[in-house]
Length: 420
Ligand SMILES: NC(=O)c1ccc[n+]([C@@H]2O[C@H](COP(=O)([O-])OP(=O)(O)OC[C@H]3O[C@@H](n4cnc5c(N)ncnc54)[C@H](O)[C@@H]3O)[C@@H](O)[C@H]2O)c1
Image (cartoon, rainbow, N blue to C red; front, top):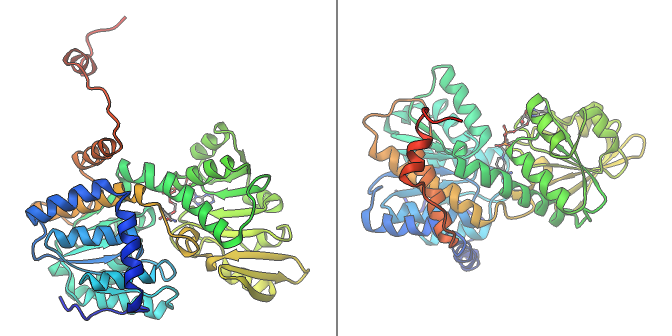
């Protein structure tokens, strides 16, 4: 691994990054345990790992864990706006080359992915599947080196499943997002809290009394709705899937079509993994002052080109707030250029929740190496024993004990003979 193969904003930020990485590690006890074991056992000895993740303090703790396990790790960003430049500098100091700069343009973003792939990875760690897609298309000459990969987020898993369905997936993948210890916590509590945090930091608005429209009631949508309600907002949900819409109704939220919600909302948050969820027809009926934010993986959930086409003026009012003045004088406010607001305008998920997601990541990478001979090129779920172990370790770290089934109960739960 060429340790000089990095491109970061400013190496002098390393000390600040180091301190913040250390702070995050205090809230990541499960990753810490894995790191200690990896240091002793070196399960990834000599393995080249290319990771395309949000460059945050939590990701740094994962990267250091893989390095302790013997891997050569190289990292790029999974979003042009999510990099924490001080963390990137600190990781370079820790001999982990990073290719990521907050605010990089799309050409640089893909150039950084290319550089990371130049390391001829044997394991890929992706968040959104841009790394894997590049590897399967422009850099397919490198695929034979790869043992396997992991995918962190819902949108990435959707992309991988469609690659698999098309018969084009070339190596085994583990859908880390679909572990219970990932989506039930990271997507719900992590995205819930950090999206509200990002919007608050970007705008300093008061949530109490606002009509907040959450587009998409998946696991992330559950979290955002729950936290906005907790701050005193009236939550409106838009959905396309009947069961989830019904769940939102019974959870006590108003549910309506987007065109109706567009007329009444003060704050809109898209979290669907879909595109053009907020579109031209919606901008045309929104109230003056409406705030638009996205927390879904890509910046296509709000149709920004359509917003641009309707605007007669655009100006940046605050660091992450762009004001669009429409022909009739109404102003709409887009946060963080429509990119994931929790990472663009805040720090992403709190470390305590990434502790579980990244424990899953580390253990799945170890699993891929151990089982390399028998795994096929398809999308695998996280092995149940890993999911259960992460939950168990997290509970232990939190000092929480639970009950065990008695032999009699275990037998009863596995039987059909006993009834009324
Ligand atoms: N910001 C973050 O840090 C973060 C963290 C985790 C996941 N994500 C991303 O957030 C997105 C959502 O993830 P999730 O786990 O909640 O997914 P999910 O599949 O559980 O939920 C998405 C929901 O959106 C609904 N939906 C789709 N199109 C819609 C439309 N046009 N209008 C209204 N609803 C629509 C779906 O029916 C579904 O219920 C994905 O892109 C994921 O990658 C972001």
